[in-house]
Structures are given as C-alpha cells and as structure tokens.
Image (cartoon, rainbow, N blue to C red; front, side, top):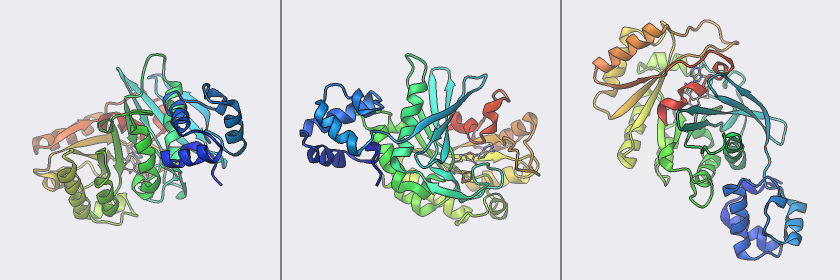
Length: 344
Ligand code: SAH
Ligand code: SF4
C-alpha cells in the first residue's frame, strides 16, 4: 500500500483525516503545511493535535522521496538525484537564469521511446512515476532554492515520455498549480512530448491550459522514424494534434529539434521543416545535441552550423530560438536540461 500523503487528492486526504478522528478543516491545514510550507514530517504540522498526528503517522508518511546527491555546475545549475522509496532514482534539474528559476522534472524511470540521441531511453522503461513522486521533485527543488527566490517555471522535460504517464502527471500538475498549495501558474508549466496524438488530445481537454512542446526533430517522415524509432504516429498526425491543441487552447506550441550535425541540420531538413510548419503560429526551439557517453556515431553541430540552420528557418518565415550554450561542465551530461529555458 502506498502510504505517502502526496499520493492523495483533497477528497482522499479528507477521508483519511476523518478516519483518524480529525475534523474537516484539519485536512486543509495539513495540505497547507505540506504544499505551502513544505512540511517533511508530521511533527512539522505544528497547530494540529498530537494524538491525531500520532495516529496518522502510525500508518502514513507525508512524503516518500529523498534528495540524493546534488551536482552544482559553474553556471549555478543544480542537478538533483531524487531517490524513490523502492531504490530507483530519477533526475530533476533546477536551472537559474536571471530572476527565473526553472525546474525540469521526470515522469518515468527510463523511457520506452528510445530516441537515438537520448540517455534516458538507453535501457528502456523501468516504471512510471506516481503522482506523488512527480510532485515531490518540485517540493525537493523548492528546498534547494536560494533564500528569497521562488520557483518560476516548470518544464516536464526530464526522464520519460509524459504522455505515457498522463494519469499520474495530470493530478501532480493540478497540485503544483493549486493556488492554495505550491501555486505555480499554468502558463509557467510546459509539457514536452515525442508523440502520441491521442494523449495530446486528452491533454488538450485538461483544465487549466498548460503549454505544450512537441519534440519534432525532423519533418521528413523517414528521418523522424530513424531518430525516434518507436514513434507510433506519422509527422502529419503529430502536427495535426499540435494544431488541435493550438485551436482548443489558444496557446502557441513549441517544436523542439535536437540538432545532430550532418543528420537533421541540412538544407533539405530546413526546407522540409519550413514547408511542414508554414502558417502555423509556433516557435521552433533548436537544441544542439549534448553528447552522451554511451551513444556513438552522432555529432553535436558547430555553433556556426547551428546558427546557419536557425537562419535558414527564419528566412523561411519561422520563429526560431537557438539554445545558448552553457558551460560544458557536469550539467552538460544531462541531455535534457539545456533546452528547458527556451520553452517555458
Ligand atoms: N520525452 C519527452 C520529454 C523528455 S525529453 C520528449 O521527448 O519530448 C525532453 C527534450 O530533451 C526532448 O526534446 C529531447 O529530444 C531532448 N533531448 C534528449 N536527449 C538530448 C540530448 N542528448 N541533447 C539535447 N537534447 C536532448
Ligand atoms: Fe524518451 Fe524523450 Fe528521451 Fe525520446 S527524447 S527517449 S521520448 S525521454
């Protein structure tokens, strides 16, 4: 049985408090301690009666994850290892930029999609994260923030394919968004997906409206299939789902393209992308590939050729951002963390 309170919605917390003889308003007090003030244990819930806390503590914990090692890079990026209660671990990355503090979080242990350039998919999927495990990455990151600064943006771009774990991700995002709790605006939350139009449609039905990023990588069908071998949909289907998202939510979609030298940054790749995205209000976020130790045969493009590719797309009428290169130190090992700031 999962016993952490972070796994429960408000109704379930209320039920639990009643079961342990508490009053209804005490359920709200506990949620405030947990999500607003970041309580780590029952003793932190200071204005609640000791017998009630004791009875709850005998059966449930507030949280289930622990902070493991934290790597701090020269540019201030903090890469956290988050230890899960069954011994697995995922990464979450906190990226400061000016007054912004962006957190990149994970949704799965591993990933089943197997994009050829990505470290997360190398060993397939181990398991989905639970809603509490997704949410607790935000709570742990908050505790690492420098005094006086707040989490300003969230990108779901860590390990895993978010659309394959929507049942857990959506309740976690609702908690993160909840003005009574962590209180992060939906406009500051971006979910990135490598495909899955049906799930994107479901995501589009969700309130509130979060931002959507689609990992496109190539507009040419064959090339995209090479880069995203387990993609279940065609480029056309993927673009159609992005359009539906835009029509339904009125939110501009971001397309991410991991640039691989000589592979998807050629003139014909730019042409195909311009043709595919013609007239669609969107931004293309180009991310020069971060090399991964266990992946051979791919190349990060030079800055000049990445800039060339960006210029070609711009000349074709597209709105383009190119990820600025940050210090090539320890943080560079995480394939995903760099693009985070371009899309949220
Ligand atoms: N599975 C989702 C979200 C997590 S990956 C997705 O694919 O969108 C988030 C982003 O990181 C994706 O755009 C992905 O293509 C990119 N990425 C993965 N590995 C990378 C690497 N080694 N270098 C640069 N970007 C990478
Ligand atoms: Fe999975 Fe995204 Fe990595 Fe592809 S890029 S393997 S979908 S995490």
